[in-house]
Image (cartoon, rainbow, N blue to C red):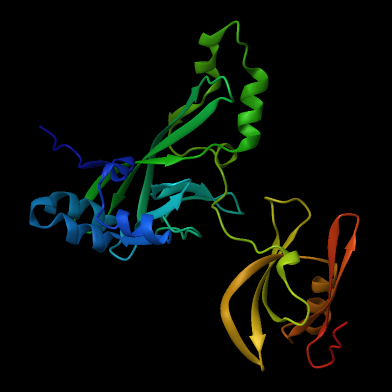
Length: 277
């Protein structure tokens, strides 16, 4: 008789009563728990579950506890697509990274729940992860892209509610990238930059399919020619793109912020030549 494959529904992690919940409720600051953290909490009695979780990598952020609307929630790894329409399993951080593992996509399913104030869409992907000494299956959630939701809402006929099943895809293999959301990330609005701040463009990430026509830049703030803080992303405007095209990674300074047509126009100049207005 074939041995049953170990299985874990990652959404079950949300039911755990973490001791850190009270701290998050008090400080309202996120708490990140890695696979190693969870395994330590499980102890010897949870060794079987620990062996399954190790397939995700012991340093992988498995749970992010965060405070929202007077309540603590638990974020878990999810399936997302990237800008090249590749899909992968991402960790639970606010700005998640893809989990490096030997992943096989088994099947997926999407659901539709009728609601008076907007219908609810959900989906899950069944995957298998293998290592040299272990193999397990995971049920992982994914959120459905707004464009796909709009398509289903347009096709749905309230007079024929049973037809909704035929509209919601389910199949063997991996979910189509067009169905699911891009991985979340923090983009700092250009309007948040202040006059006199100096930036260095670290790289051009190209056009952003999430926002047609927008170009993503990685930048870092500078002080006295030294980088400060973390690298972050912006949707570069014309003036920042022109600076990068002409001067590359030479730092630039915000020299003016002007209001025009309900938009803030941010202008830059080379930091060593800048005159702030």
